Image 1 (tube, rainbow, N blue to C red):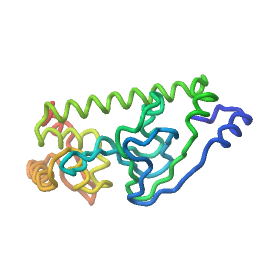
Image 2: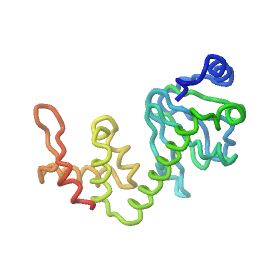
Image 3: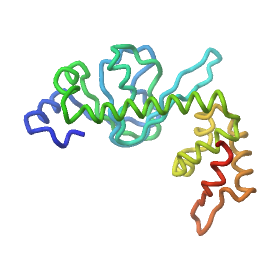
Length: 203
């Protein structure tokens, strides 16, 4: 994103930026905290969540390396609507947003990345609404695996269940069903997913 900035611009960006390491469970920002900084995930995983009135954690989104985190709050000069937490170790580029807005936000080399990131957030929101309101648990699990097949081995299953707003037991039962029906199976220590059969579960 910054590769086409000239040397002077890069030095200006460096002056308003810091790189911070977070450990598992560390909080990047809290819900209702003012969004004064711009967060760009360089490495690792960050989870965005809210806590409902019963104390249950509702995961809204997960971010992986080379993604903006909750930047919509910055653009609208509003408080963060949810809390951001590091899952495992992560490395984050933190930029003073007010200075970034003044010097870089409308830069011709930066704007395409901003627009692309916002479009991605809209698609994610649409998927959340669609999944939670129109799909049952089996359909939600099938669609998640279809869109995130690599995550099945790199994210703990109870976290996936939490993201899908179902219990770990329900997730395990559905996963076993997919394996019994040979939609998902292991071959030479590799997880194989028949995506055409999986898609039929939710389309």
